[in-house]
Length: 134
Ligand SMILES: [Zn+2]
Image 1 (tube, rainbow, N blue to C red):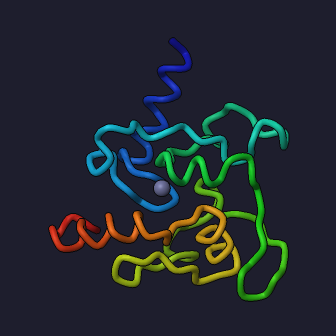
Image 2: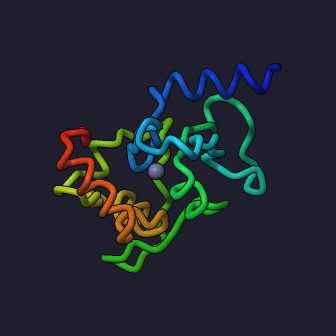
């Protein structure tokens, strides 16, 4: 019951969209968005609201228990985007159907979460044509 309340709160707070790639639940009707531990339990993350985010299945699976990655531009070890502490627009921008990193954190997160692999770009291209990409 408690867990269901937390799930509901996370979902409402995120307005039913992935907090990483911004995919809306309505565009992924057969796959309920996941509750992501921003810092994985194995890295001492907790189950509190401050450490939870809503994530689509693709972002969640690609992120796994990663908390960092290698910035593809600099080769430097860089932490991932933190939906509770960071602001999306400061780290990412949309370029048509692509999601690009504005910062090392953004670039690393785009890379680790595989935000621009073909099926995802194809879906965003379609949504854009339908006027559904915001
Ligand atoms: Zn996503």
